[in-house]
Image (tube, rainbow, N blue to C red):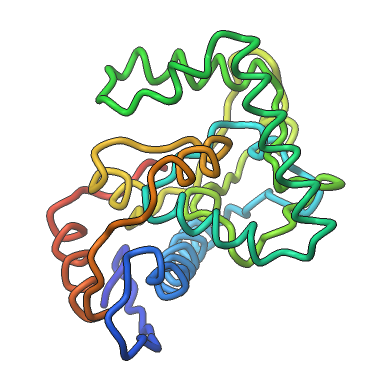
Length: 233
């Protein structure tokens, strides 16, 4: 395929048995990495450089939107972790919910109806003001980096890292994405689920999605991508 004018070749290993949408995430991560790589090459060809580095975790204190499939995926990821790490992360998820409740934001983030742009921005800003660490953040690094959500993969900047930490209005220059899988998946679910509520939501909404062939999942995804503009950047 061509992304941003660049030819991109992608090889995918697909499951052979019918699967639920969440089990397509490893395949979609490969796609996302290819799309993000094309975006990075594009900005670098213009003389810019991605400034994100290990230890620069300002974005890990923003609300991370998930699709339903990703919420179930996060539940699976947490269940697969070594016991000590799993316990710490589950405690952080519980602590994050308490912080949201104390700030009278829990119910607002639980609602999944469509919001206006102004309401979405207000909620995002309220979340940032909490300075709430992602439950997966340890020593300013992601403990599930290889399995991190799509929105995290797509969030890269070329502006100085210090700009991301500023408390006031700041100049953050994001890398434009030729394709946003995070937005496409969230739009398919009609509303996103905050990462910090993923375990709570998945527990109260058992996965009843249909199992289908991997090829069918991909065909549906590409049909959505063809009908959507590029994601934010």
